Length: 64
Image (cartoon, rainbow, N blue to C red; front, side, top):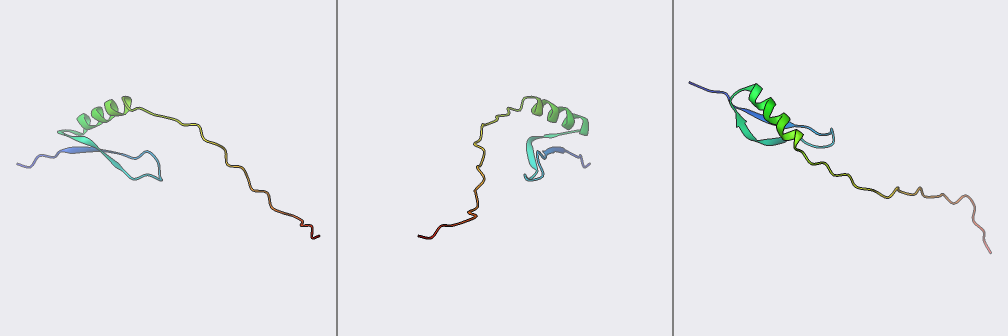
């Protein structure tokens, strides 16, 4: 008898790859509940960034 196990994969952003969360689950419903539980406990950190200054192009030069 073959039993299916389910894993949970998440994708945060299109620029990041899929991430497999730890654990194997007997049913899809159990996997969804576990994923929701894990994501509810996720810690999110934001950081302040310096805004990049635009470089100014030189329009004229003075020769002496």
